[in-house]
Length: 329
Image 1 (tube, rainbow, N blue to C red):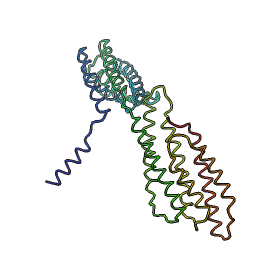
Image 2: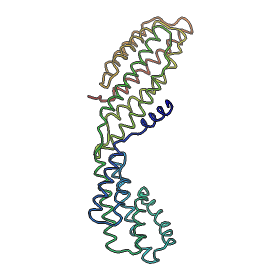
Image 3: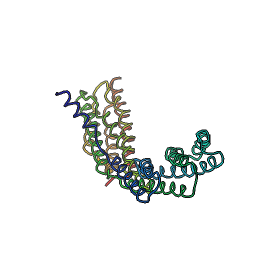
Image 4: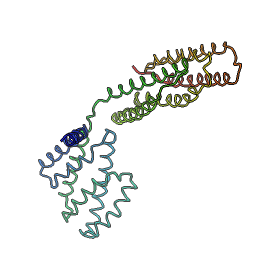
């Protein structure tokens, strides 16, 4: 019984109804109701055309309707030509499709094949191409595609989710810098680095969501969050590049503490506002202090100091990327 309960609970967790599902169901119902109200033949096809028009974003939905309208018009024209001349039989239908499919592929509207196939099958099943049938199919297209566009104009606000990703990512970067500072001070690395893996996961999800937001705004070509996450991704590449060098210092030298203090302060100021100029100035001060310190007296110390100086240069590049970002309110 306990096993069955757990299995049922897992199935219930998997079962969910999202916005797109709701919009698809609502749009299909409205399209069929309108087509049925106007007493159109094959009125259920209006619902099918709506289902095929609802896409994850507004731009994709517009593109889907465009491809389906063009391919359907091409299908109607070829059906009129082939069926009118050679008659209504399966062989003619097959030959017509042999011409139809390459045509819509060459026009770049192959995504509309299924929708146009629905229209073509209506014409074929009637066995006679009439003006009334043409009006019927055009009306089904108008109702089905319009319903899909209308319901897809509503998109849930994802601002809060994007902001959560931003805060989570900044928290991970702060933790990474804090662990680097701790290592430079104490020379003991017990950190497992899971924040790096988590940061990559969040960046992938956040950029995908931000791009979706771009696709849901018909006139906006850029999303500030997408630019922000792209900037953080570039910074993460630098962090991943320098970590092996900084955590493999042969010895902890005097300069390590100087860099550690800088990293501690930086870890406390990881946020979307642009403070890079301030920290780049501090980094210059670190370089000056670094130069004042005694020169290495053995090979191990030389290697450690060289790695630290390279780390400073890489952090300057990290901050330069942030400085180029205009910041978020």
